[in-house]
Image (cartoon, rainbow, N blue to C red; front, side, top):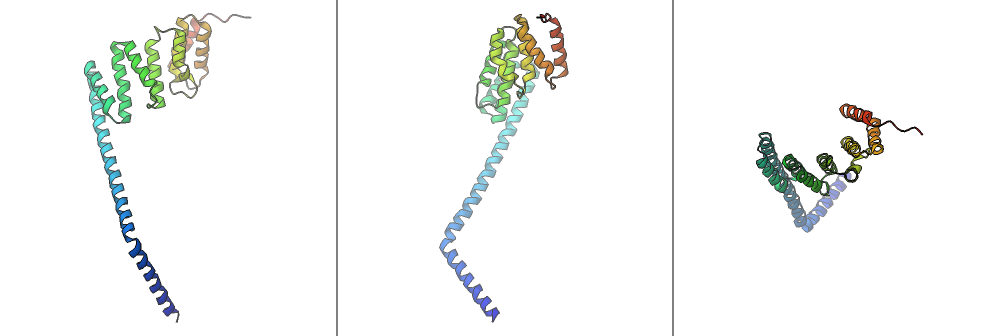
Length: 217
């Protein structure tokens, strides 16, 4: 008797599934086609992006080789082209390298390009911070301490990637400006940071020795 009920239940289920299929089969097929098409489109997009990245990598390496061969004008043009057309990662690197090529012949022109990178909100935080510090390095001998402070103070924070270089640049700038209090402030910050590179710590100690002793109260 139970087998008969089982057969009836199975028949009812089959009938229900058939009715559902007859009613919704077109929708199910359409959804399946859309899923397959979406997966195919995404795979195609990934392939195109990987191809673009590979091409950009080759072009970037070629531009680096031009720079190493002292063909700076050609290297600058190659980096500029990459900065305009390459995927985001290579575009960032190309802009930084193009600024370095300009800086080799025109420090102020290079600093201007670095400033543009530092002001570009579409660039990553690390790239902007690096550009800010590199611009400061190009201008440390010509800018006033106050201008250097305005440029680099945000890059000296404990979480900043290039804080060590920024602090050293500000210490040198303050020293050139005969602002011993400011120079000592940055040198002390360099000395107290446990992650300061040893070479930079040695330079800071040497500069500290050139400062006049602190006046006793």
